[in-house]
Image 1 (tube, rainbow, N blue to C red):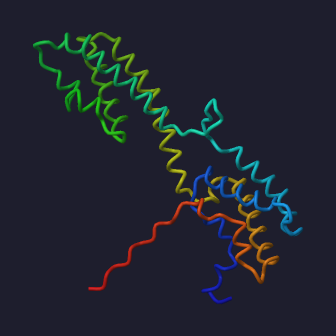
Image 2 (image 1 turned 60 degrees about the vertical axis):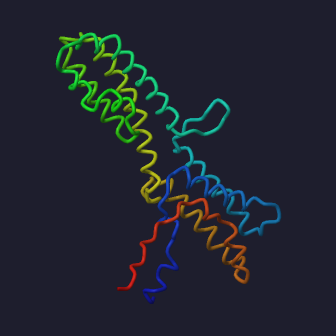
Image 3 (image 1 turned 180 degrees about the horizontal axis):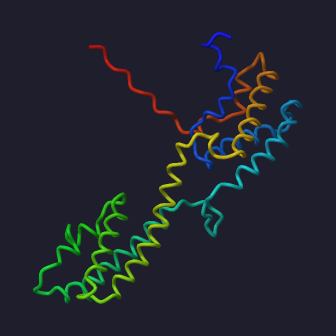
Length: 230
């Protein structure tokens, strides 16, 4: 087979770069399309096997669900935890740190970038900056006692959990589908069956086969910009 046509016979679903949640939405669209009344029998018959593998795949989706049933990410939770941390830092500064270091050197070790540099940290820097602050409190236990350092350490561990979970969720958006486990592999082949059968059924109307999928749900690949000729 000529190399330029070889990829036409590859299961392109295996090469999609996408997170598990978004791929679930993509497959759900196709399942709903197959279940439309009047769908040709060959295609309608693929709804049941697709539904089975989709259920197995979607069970792996990790998402927090609100009390109203809406799906949420960890962003709100992370910001809420940071609000608590800001309140702790401010209160500890007024009641413990400032009195302990009044007219003494060493305050710069607690706040190397001043108090505002800590409380107003940009989101990507929050975890690193707060961890440095916690270590500084622990190192200054002779002046501050153990209490503020221990309390800050607990806040740090709680914040670390939500921050890391959020980062992992975002990194999965660029994950190759076939690396998300055997359930993903099964789902890709079920979608490929729909793709091939759709082209068979609508061989003279391929746009109807294309309508079985909504590729707009998937993230767009960034294409390298063309260099201007010198």
